[in-house]
Length: 166
Image (cartoon, rainbow, N blue to C red):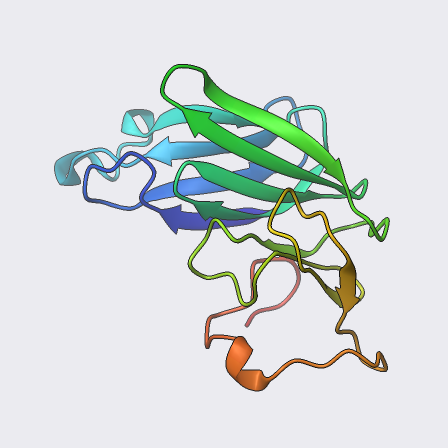
């Protein structure tokens, strides 16, 4: 569902963070970019498992030592990496029971449009707390009374796959 370039291993080049929602290898993982002479050889892209294998993972946001993933069943996965423990994943139920998560942004990432965790499905919702998408939800969907200043949203591409194009 998502293919996101992000520097995961601090070696100076972008790696690729992927969420794959179906099949025997479903879950979240990242591919380590090999040296330039081997970029077109698929077997040289080493796969690193992150988590989410028991969920139908949808879209993700990658940050330094953290990946946040929206799932189809309304759970948000917060995966973090520590040198001693590897990747661990915490499941957090969406406070609004949002199913079929179409986008997620987390404070771990510089691309996060607002503080806290932001989740979109049929609407756009923000959570004011930065701790595991907790706190009071704010509904920014069409027709809601919540508003935000346009300056709070950086100019970043928002299309992450699915039908059609940007």
